Image 1 (tube, rainbow, N blue to C red):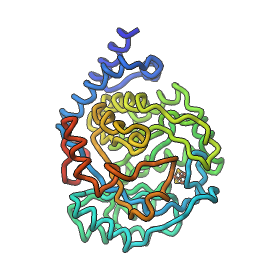
Image 2: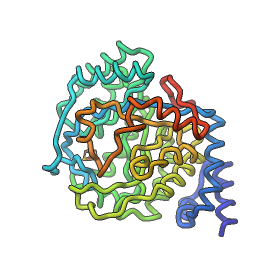
Image 3: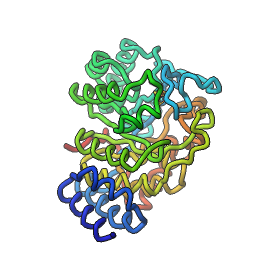
Length: 349
Ligand code: SF4
């Protein structure tokens, strides 16, 4: 059995492509031994492109107001227990000021689908950040919008857009989202973002309710074919105010194994060691970096609102998850031979 794992992993390392069945096999036969075989290969592939560099982004959670009702999400519209907030332009610029001083050169504006942030408002904020900090990249993670809106924000200066595809299995998608949200709509958004010219990121949760091995294999095949510039993959963590409150969290080990596979599919992809990993395991982020991750996104949101942007229970936003603790983050990375760098950290094509 291990021989097959070694053979398929070696093929992936050489050809950067597998069949759905082969991806399924790698996932079904996951073991510590399989992870120990693939992780060094993933780290080597990452180092050949990015050396020991770890790119760092300042995450600004601009609003926890959302019109959608994704079944797994703590800030979904129908959660009346959620204490809502919204940052204004001055708040956001002040986060950028602080982040710039800390050495951050990418600002990620993430939020629910909050209609307050219409095209004019977002374009104004993006232009202000880019004119004050021309050496910085702006990443957006604001959900589904029309192609026209994406284009306007790109023209205003936004560089990157993160939109997790959530699952590449249509049936699985329908079990995680209300009827009003469509799998096809989401995929259409991702295609539009790429065509417009954004550095585009997709991604999914590991261990989400109703996820099958086949669905995970489809995620990997989708990533192989879509060729994203970034890929956000983190373990599912339940939120108390959702119907999935009693479901178990996803596995840190399987998540890191999948990160290693994704690194071998696309050696150049920007692969974050997600906050969800750090939330589930104190060493989760380091483990992810040793499996080929090369991006960390410490939280730069005002401390007063950090505990309100709770997509899942007990989300880490303090300590090395906080941008203010970048020194500790650097030390944590140095412990495993990685170096936090201060530049925009674009994908190397
Ligand atoms: S996952 Fe995103 S789009 Fe869905 S409810 Fe949560 S914030 Fe809104």
